[in-house]
Length: 268
Image (cartoon, rainbow, N blue to C red):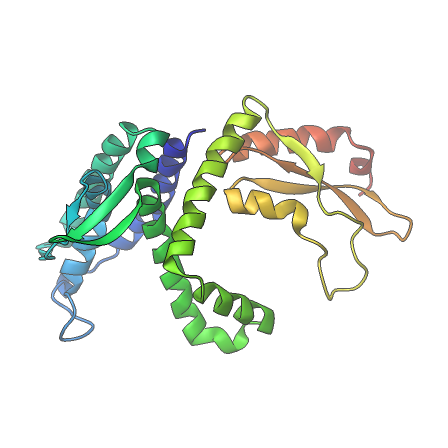
């Protein structure tokens, strides 16, 4: 699966949530503003609907001049989902014309003669999607951070300290890794690895070393653990199956085949 195909797949997944949100915008509240200096609900909703196509379109214009944003408002809630569908189709059309070499091209934003930003096209698309997710998690942390574990809060603090430049570089590397793994697996239905480097630890203080599954999480690839035996202490041993991103159904089929043939399956 190419990097473009992965972007298209992620676009479709994100569109499902966006569509559900826009379907619920009340028609009689389009003029409502969360703050006097904010855009109205009608403006915000139409902005969200237009983002996929707009971002894909401006990613193809380099150098891109710093824009003056003038966001129109939706006149009716009924126009929001059609606007999203039109925007998604524009994004699909643009993305399908690209290849991995196009994603590696540098996209530049200029303010007159001053260069404001210069990042790979692929990072433009991925950064926006992931930055929006990070913003949503930040709000949840603000409300419920006291309930987060110290380990999680420390990890979030560390993530907040990562510079934008390092983050963009990591995203570009991740996109290349995803494409390379897809080529490497080729027509294989799944790959078999250990679930962990050692048997399950006793107690509930830790779930063990996650080293064997971290890679698949990074790549957005489906992976599952299949219990296959017990060690000498009666603790479970597992087999990890992983597949290419987007091949969830194929992976579940392989897992069902393995489960029906492994001895541990007979133990209820």
